[in-house]
Length: 301
Image 1 (cartoon, rainbow, N blue to C red):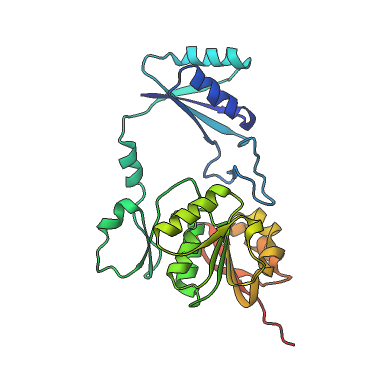
Image 2: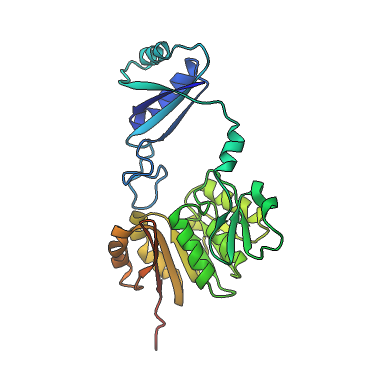
């Protein structure tokens, strides 16, 4: 099997995928051409982010070709249909794979700490019954957060090592819900998971149910007016700066604020935005990313 690969601007991606499929391609998908680089951008807008609803600035189009289809003829047909020139493109072989098994093999159990283990469901039976660590069963899905990314790992480590017992927790930008679920399994009381993306809210609800824990979920306007003992936000540096007043206001006096999604070079700048309310310092760093943590002062009357 072969795959046609080309670069395009984000505003053309949707039209091109439709045109290639109409012309006979088996499938067409789009990914960020700057994925895993400093120029990587979120597709869904967060407050203060540079995300573009039209797609990534540089999009990579992956077009799966059926046997016998001439890629040059396919490109010519699409160019004629859309009245444009696509520029350079390549074709590469795609080996036949058991894609489900291959994907599963890439996601094994993740050891967060001596207390916490993240286990994809297909590995659940491989964990020894004698292993007393708390387990989160979570499969990779549409929502961000499987525990493998350094920022998620840092937040999980903080929760595993520092979370007070029977405490209230707000996970803002919950993604898959992994941090909210971890907090609940680690002994938290009331836990809320909030996200601007309805898919993430649904993923958190489903994952909480699968792990047999009660997590309150919703969009930002559904969060009740209250303060929390712990607020954790693993998003991106720009939205973290914009959200500083709101996130600090959600922390009880004496409570903790935990932030990640921050590169080491961004730590001081992000911390400065929180300085008027909570002094944030680097708790730990991992693979070029940092986790900032701080405690809101208790007002003395």
